[in-house]
Picture 1 (cartoon, rainbow, N blue to C red):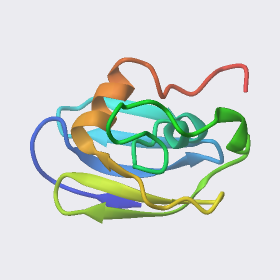
Picture 2: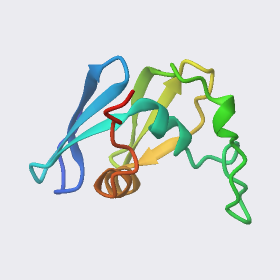
Picture 3: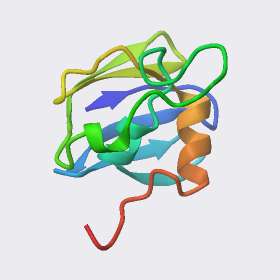
Amino acid sequence: MWMANSDAHRPTQIQQHDDRTLAVDWADGAKSLLDVRALRLACSCAACVEEWSGAPLLAPDSVPEDVMPRAIQSVGRYAIQIEWSDGHSTGIYAFERLRSLADQGLLSRSEQS
C-alpha cells in the first residue's frame, strides 16, 4: 500500500484491490479501480512511446495478459513508478495523468475479464 497527502487530484491511498486491479482513493473523495494491464499499456516512458513523435513503441500483444505490479514506489510528491512482472520498470505515472486516464475510463477494469 502507498499513501500520500496533498491536493484534490492526488491519491491518498493506492492498494491492490485484487489480482488484476489497483484501487486508488483520491483526496477529493473519488475512487478509481484501475485494470493493471491497461495501466501497463498506458506507460509513456521512452521505451514505450517514441520521444519526439509520441508514436507508440509498445506492442500490446507483447504485454502478458497476467502482467501485474511487483512494487510501487513514490516519485517525489507527483507520481508513482511501478515495477512490473514483465520486467518493465522505467515508467513514471504522474498523478495528474493517472487521474485523467482514470476519469476518462481508459484504465477501468473490464467486467468481462
